Length: 308
Length: 308
Image (tube, rainbow over all chains, first blue to last red; front, side, top):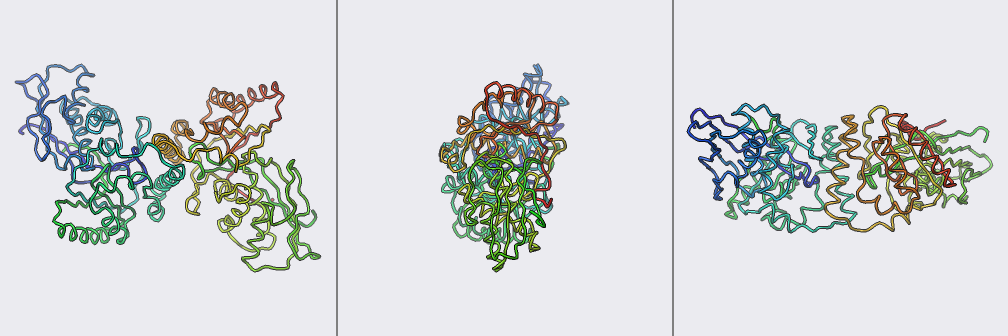
């Protein structure tokens, strides 16, 4: 698109093992790209192109994750009769657990804020991005939206977002196998209750994870990146889950669990040698099984959604 | 006791609203005093005096919280036939939720480590103090023991203890009303299960509390010092719970909840003016009700168990 501006919105890992619904981090790649351009011949927001999605995504702006937030934003600011053409270039599959809907939602409101020079801060844009996320996931959880917009690892609490410090040298392996799991469905299979003992264990792990991040205590991180509640209930939806987790553990990952509601599996390493070794073993097996899959290696993204 | 050495072991607040079983902090006063002396005419550990307890505490060393850990310590170090006389001066009631048994257990092993110059570090002594705590509470929880021994606010995880940073100017109000609640009994009334929603909320509060401590973010502390699981189930055991909590809230406490398994109620303030005002109102009401009660005002203790 000529004369347009382009933004990048990163993939994200929500839950992060022990922080169900409240914790997430962004990775450097993949990430969606959204292009926006003023259209003097139009008086409305339009989606002119969607690429990269096997799923047929809606062109109706009141139904697409990328545009719902924009409509609400324009409405709140009483901006009418303005022509904006939008291209959405998906770089990750919907229903993969990599925060695909969050990336489109963040990219959408961010690009329009830039295009029209509205001057809203990122934290103010999150509210609108959440509107887009809502139709995809059925909930107002910011565990993908906050890191996607702001970068880093973020805790969401009461509509506030807290960036946690990141020790050096963390690397993330993402293993996506083509099985679609929709967040809404993945939520439905979760039991409404847990035991007090599970709560105490998960609570302790979350505390350990946060302290480990503040103190750059890798051994504490390794002892804390565990999910004793959700993983057991969802892992049967993901082919090769135990195999992949065991391989990452054998290669000294700090932790491995389900990214968001899956099926992507993430593992965190403190060096690339171990990560590469794990990647190679997993790749070999998935090729042997003739799976459709994709493996990403990345660092944690610090910038969030940015202008390209 | 002439020629003896004396140690001080502080009262502690376990759970700290959102950290059930894993979090605790020590306060400057009250605290138990334990005195120890070598006795050349004896070949064993003896309790020669117990003061300050309305409850009849056992003089048998294999039954008293203060001495069980000592016996195990001496056994592990293969120290036999040594005469030690011990005085235990209780400064807080048993079954008050102020970590009375932890104070005796920590004081006991600490004083003997000093007396015999055994040279164990505090973190090594915790293991033995936990043996004493076990008979009192029926569990190996270090949420009182760790802060009592080490001071500050401590997270216990997998037999490791992590001291969290303390923002300046925190003050603690403790309201004890004479109703005895034994930890074992208080545990029994707790439901074995909670909802996933309660878990998420409590988990978020714990994360907020820890981040609030690291960032000295008083507003986040205030939004996080909440217990949505245990308090509701136990508060009916404590007279005037809602009244006291409301008074502290009215006086801008950062948080107020049950100390350990109660009946003591703790409230944290960021200044003494508000704390004093809350204290006065509570005192007035409890006097009017002709309650037997005691109110303590204290700072958070940083030293833990010390030689006097």
